[in-house]
Amino acid sequence: MKFGRMKSHRRNRLLLIVFIVCAAGGATTFALFALNENINLFYSPDQIAQGEAPVGKTIRAGGMVQDDSVTRTGEGLGVSFVISDMKSAQVTVEFEGILPDMFREGQGVIALGQLNSEGVFVAEEVLAKHDENYMPPEVAAALEEAHESGVDTGQKAGYE
Image 1 (cartoon, one colour):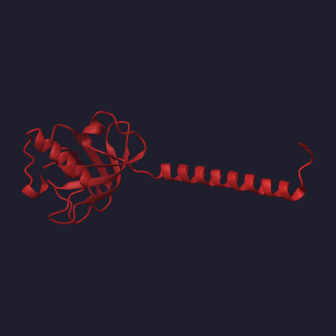
Image 2 (image 1 turned 180 degrees about the vertical axis):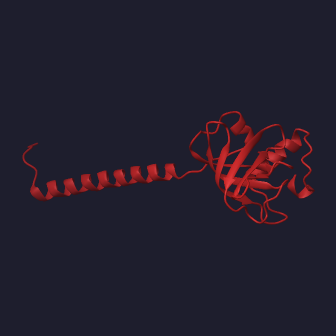
């Protein structure tokens, strides 16, 4: 077998293939980094209370709004309330803005925001259930766990 210089058309083809493979790998890497930054993981009040939720990173937190926990600030749109998993875990949520029409005590909510260093969840967005039969899957799972452990959730049979 003789080895010699590579012919120019074969060298050009090889360089084109190497460039395409490197470009595809780089594009895939950038896409995965971008997607990883935009993932909002859900954490229950129990996970937040145990310190499993990251501080300063955008996450979703959900639970039931505790009765008599909603307090509004003086003249602004600020509101503070406590969400619970209907067991023992509770998380204080602070929100500055207009709450959904369906927001009320004793209802399930999902909040998007960040946990601060004091353990208070600062919400950017609050979502409330929109009809009689809907409950976010994460909240429904937390209620089901509470029901299995013997805690009275006060919810209708459709939520069990």
